[in-house]
Image (cartoon, rainbow, N blue to C red; front, side, top):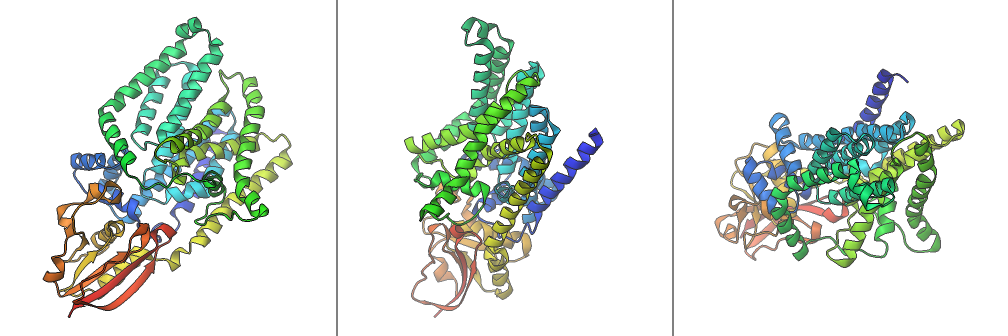
Length: 512
């Protein structure tokens, strides 16, 4: 296949992936995490970074999103398209990485196709969050790593260090992927020298790797005090539930067949079905190590690329499980979006290696159709059009708002989304306020993006005669109770897409 045909085919695959991620991109209401992203980039750059430091994430995503917004504004479609764009880059990078790793265009195209169709990857490309920026840098750094250990060139190691440094400033969970790469480098050096210390010290790759990680550490040191403070904050209070008996199998189930529901764990048949994706992934890893290792070695490469794929897909799970059992729980499905890349890539590599053409094409077609069917089923399950949430709640409120009315929101978990819609979609003289008796929020409830101008207290009930109150029952919140002197005139409910977001209510009150 000519270089031109490769580029054309890769562009087509990327367009399909971007199209799936862009379909009705704004149909789902903005939710709290995305609203956090939107609100944070409203602040000047230095203040934005300082406020981010009071949260639990590194700043690179927000910096790039802010630069993006300078050109493309801060509408919902704009900030979500930033994630979709990097999802497209991830698909392309999946091809580049696998093609170079296995010296196989077929495997590269198969990886790009499955990444484009993966429902698990698609659902995190929908959000105005840092996940697709992270998936891109995970694959980019993995590609530079392979080039570095194979060619032993200084500039490959430099690019590896820079891409890893960027990754470390995207999401802290990427540290687990970086750890997988470090294990791979250590294993490569040990195998290359048979563990002999004298040979290790003389090995060029060893010193280049040391230099790369010194640079990585040096680039992260300015942020290290902030990271330690954020980590301490997480240890003191965070919302992630403890890991349970079915947490791990359920994660693998959702990776294969995304769902907002909990798989059935009752009955032998249902238990087997719930555990099947985890067992299937184990088989993929076993076959990858046994079958691909030999074929890669026959190509004359310096190391076995299958081990990097294997480690990148397994080490993050192992580390997160160990840490979750020994300290603060870090086990959450979406944090495995980086490791999931390599599960998909492992499957793609195995499918591309099937020697019989008819069987290979049949299985590739079935798996690709299965991935697409799983995504379409997930989309249908969400019933997005029947769950308009905060977006429709804001529209209905604005359509009924009178000049003397005031708006208060009872929960920070919906306040910033309502503020977004009011600010971006409507030109109002009145703005919503967050009701809070203390005027303070915890870091995981939006504290770092709250300003004094956002908050009103109990005085609002004395100063107003007509109030619109926006409530949510999501995230453990409950509806606000107004003083007895206030009479409820109307109330409407707008369900959100995901169960943890529950419902948004708009209620109109007047004072007796």
